[in-house]
Length: 171
Image (cartoon, rainbow, N blue to C red; front, side):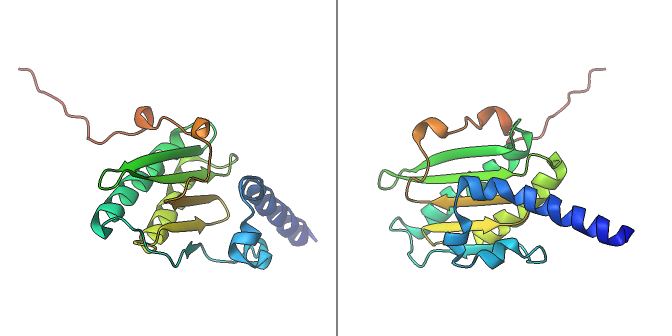
C-alpha cells in the first residue's frame, strides 16, 4: 500500500511539473497527440518544421545555435527559470526568436541538464526554420517567426558569461 501511495505522489508531481507547459503553449496541438505529454515514461523529444530557413544555412544555424546556447546558460540562473530572447540575422534583416522554461520546483542543475538535452534535440532540427524540444521538466523553442511579444523578452546578458575567469599571480 505504501508503494502505491508513493507512485501516486510521483505521478501527481510529474503532472504538476507539466502544467507550466500547457499554460505557455498548447503542446497537445503542436504534437498532435496529447498522449505524448501525459505519458510519464516518454523520452525527451523534439519536433522540427519541414520548412528550411531562407537565410544562408550556415549563418542561420550559427545564429540559432548561439541563441539557444545562451538561453541554456541563462534560464537556470533566472528567478523564474524562464527566458525569451531574440537575435538578428544580419544577412537579410531577419530575426530568430527563442524561449526556454523549466519547472519552477526544480533545481538549477536539473534545469540545466534538461535544457542541455533540449539543446541537443534542437540542433538536430537545423536548418529547419522552427524547432521545439520538450521534456517533463523543461521545454525550448526557436523560430524565425515571432511567437512572443517584444515586451516579454529577457535581457540575458547579465546571466551569461562567455569566458572563464582568470587569475593573476602577484609575487
